[in-house]
Amino acid sequence: MKSILSIQNVSKSYGPVRALHTVSFDVPEGSVFGILGPNGSGKTTLLGIVLDVLIAGAGTYSWFDGMSPDAARREIGALLETPNFYHYLSAFDNLQITAAIRKKGKDDRIPILKQVGLFERKDSRFQTYSLGMKQRLAIGAALLGNPKVLVLDEPTNGLDPAGIAEIRELIRKLNKEGITIIIASHLLDEIEKVCTHVAILKKGELLLNGPVNEVLLSEDQVEVRAADMILLQQVLQKMSGIRKINGSGDTLNLTCEPSVTPVAVNEFCIKNGIVLSHLLLKKKSLETKFMELTNKG
Amino acid sequence: MKELLAIEWLKIRRFRTFWILSGLFIVLLPLWNYEISQGVIRAGGGNKGVNFLSTQYSFPDVWNNLGWWGSIFIMFISILVIIIITQEYSYRTNRQNIMDGWKKLQFYHAKVYLVIVLSFVVTVYFFLLGVVFGRVNSGSFTGVFDEFQHTAYFFLLTLDYLGFALLIGLFIKKTGLAIGLFILYSLIIENLLRGMINHYTDLPWGNLLPLQASDELFPFPLLRQARAAMMAQTPSLSMTVYTCGASAWCLIYYFSCRASLLRNDW
Image 1: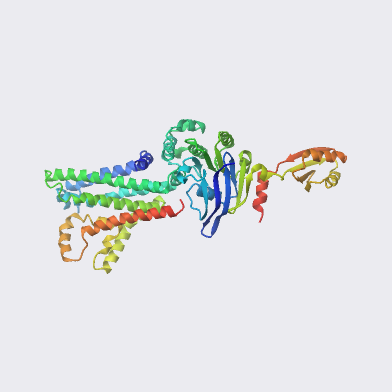
Image 2 (image 1 turned 90 degrees about the vertical axis):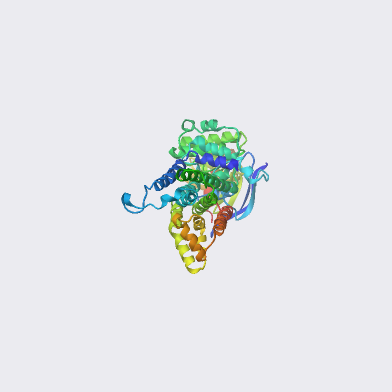
């Protein structure tokens, strides 16, 4: 798959604090790419560097196969940290400035304000907006002029549950239309629901990256219950492909190799005279994976 | 340049502070000079006080006199420039402008062009006020272009003050602190430094400090003759030196801001 952003060995320090250390990865075209990491892991610093507001200490990056950085940025809708607008200007006037800098001739301010639900308030000054409205305006500004890529840093900040669901739907819809989306968030659940690819950062180091399915592959767990739990455990210990059995109350959690499916577990139990009363495949959540990775060392 | 200025105009055209501070400058500068020319503002008590400066509104004296007062009133526009630049930092729109596709240099040049345009407009206003005051008080246009170099001096003075304001704004970034430091520097710190430098040198090199260099282009009106006599007696610097000094400061502001903006994180 063609990459839309290529990051090579990017490092950055703030005095003695190492914010990023030789981070490299590619963002494939058409993906929803999640950048995850605890607070202070370097997510915003990394996005700041690829958007040219921060200067990398070392390393390189390139957008769209080496397009000039400022031309590339005009094809990218970006929201970094906070919604950044002129407080004394209305949404309409603020978007006019964004459009002028992006050199987008076609005036799509009205459909965009309708899309993010701010059309009724388009003439109100930015400073009168609630946090959620400010965030929606920032997403609207990022969408001006049909960008090829959206870079969204914590896009659901300040939004209520309905607003968060709206943004999720919007991301899915835009991605279907062919827009690549790079999203940094601490809301792992959100990332998991929409992302096709993920990169995990911790203290400025890239722990892993790749397609969500691959990253989470072989980490599935099977939950089982039966009338005789002791017998169940004894039987399952004989089954090949089960790496670990954890008991929690009246349930056993099996950590299995990729080849072990719930069907295989069920068949094995029946062959050994056990009827399962409960059988559940649990995809290891990104949150569990994330906590495991970021808590190591 | 036109494109950058058009975007700057979008930013300030509905900015109330811009209109209030510009309006105060536009109204107060002529009002103040009108009251002095009419003898309404006097030194000393009540309406028996003295007013020496009312004689200074005919051609060609009006140019220096108006320029001297202008160098005080230009503070309004200098503070405006500080607010315009520092609010980009407080709203983080400086970052957003870059993310939306401007080069860092384009963001900076948009502000530099704004400073140049403001200086030009203020100078045109200064010229119009000079013509009106001079015509009213001289009774004719005779000598209107004598000492006309003061119009160019005034452009340089405005550029020096606004350029310095831009520098303070870009380096300090916080509106309140930047305005405070600007006022403190222009009223106190520069005078302290000037006094110290001049105390230890034969020539008054302290007069070449950033704002003082252009202030020297407009000596206090009644002291002009005395100063001319004094300059013949004691070592002094010529108007050419002050003009070069003020111009050099404008270039120093430009290049130091440029280097800092390109080298540092935003």
